Length: 332
Image 1 (spheres, rainbow, N blue to C red):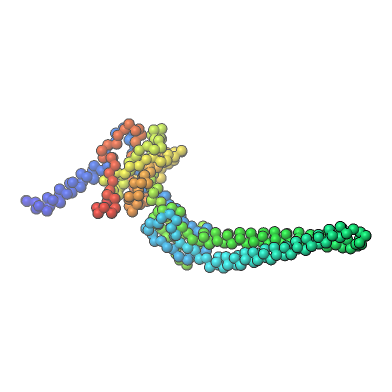
Image 2: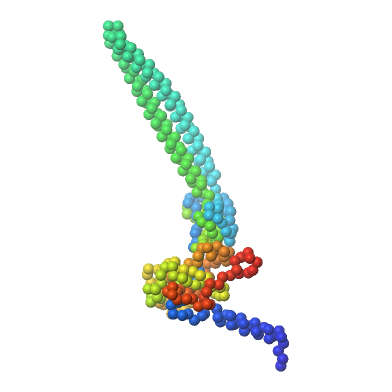
């Protein structure tokens, strides 16, 4: 029986595909000094939350959207706070008017004091043979009353200034609260979830949006105790994802746990899960991630390979092999 050209072509394609799958980088035999383990990609998440309880007025971002650091994420309703600010501004103006009024009163009291001091000096200069003791005492009393009035006026200014400072502090506090009701992105990232909707009333600390920090991406793997004496921070590593097995991403060891633990359930083999292992993070360089931020996904599974010594070379199958950056006209 003759096979048609179409069937032959399909058979060849299947054979080539099977071969390529069989020689995926994650399946190559590793030389001594390289250690490979299953892992999962993780991305740092940051919850954007409101400091105070309130009603969500508007949310300005969508899920999947990239935002810059400082970008406005959402606004809470501030109608009540605006009324409080107006009242605080009025109180501040009253305090300032009171200060001016008290200063004017102080000027008048100081003028009276100068007049009474002058009259008292004249009386003392004239001597007792011209002015009676009673008159001298009267003028002394007038001078003392004027001096006390000046002291009271100065205290009134201090009180008015304290009231002004309190009103200004209250106004500043209200303004800070109003500013806090505008939620901003603490860092550049991608919106993962919108956790609230306009019109919802949320409690203090209520989450509105979750951001993914796409510049902080790492794979968590678990390595046996026997290898930990040779794993150093900064050691070179490679990451191969199950979703894109033909690509090899360079990484470095950024974290090594201080204590051993049982590996989590998502580790593929039961034998690995039952062992005490050390958690290790393989971090991808932020400058590399900048070109592939649209493709960053948390939860992707794959393998991480750690080089235990700088003298050991990665095999050709684990040399960095990256997808084409988006925007160059070719699919990654």
